Length: 330
Figure 1 (cartoon, rainbow, N blue to C red):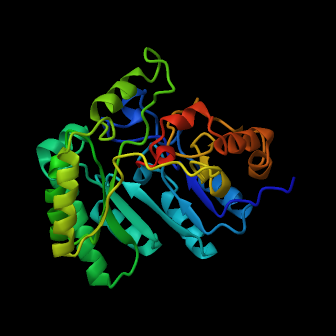
Figure 2: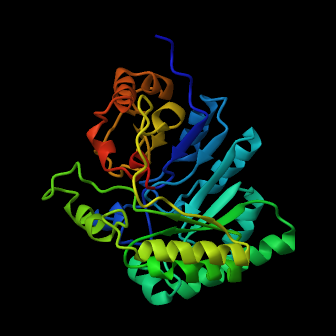
């Protein structure tokens, strides 16, 4: 058997710490983490990137808020020097005037801002701890400074996690993107059903939340109507709109339901390696630990090979069965 080619992409959880407790995120249901203790340091990231000279793209995000990572900017600068495309999602609550200038100097290739509602009431009920007016002010300022500086980077977008409680506001969020000067709105479903977990176990709360809020749980037409209106409005206003599927597409025989384990990997803030970011949780599908093995050893390990092999069958790893990406509805 030939060796698996090293990935050209990586996702690094630069920090596990977050300043919010969002309803749909596992962070809400776990003890808070200290940003200094629960973050990847620059030296470790540089060593990892140096060990993968053919890397083309690195996403600097995980369960935490990347702007809380102490070494985020040196990582961005080092990646830029290496010619690697780099970017991340942010809740934008910490996107101050000073951080705006530092980020524009670092030139990330993309920046996605999470906004899950077009009104303060909806947004703040989901993004617990955030202020809608602050995020609006921060994003507007960022757009303004990009224009004033003539900055071509980053590619800027808003990201909405669509749920039963907020999908009706999707058309208004399209208008908001246009008003703020953000050219793209990306809409995604909840990432996982957690159906592989014990209903009474450690993932009970987030499993119950997904069961109540996921649009792919027998959607009743409200989402379809909101998607149709948003699509038409985006065309009128010139906003690029990405919408997810609400129904699972047919499975291709002989093809993996997901190609993540062949092209990328997810490195947690504690150095543990998982196949992707979608599964959430530090005790799920751990395929190696960078404190014990090199990335190359982990990537070529029997555990990784077994995970890939299972994805090629009609009996995938249990953790994949409830994944929105595996099911084609992310």
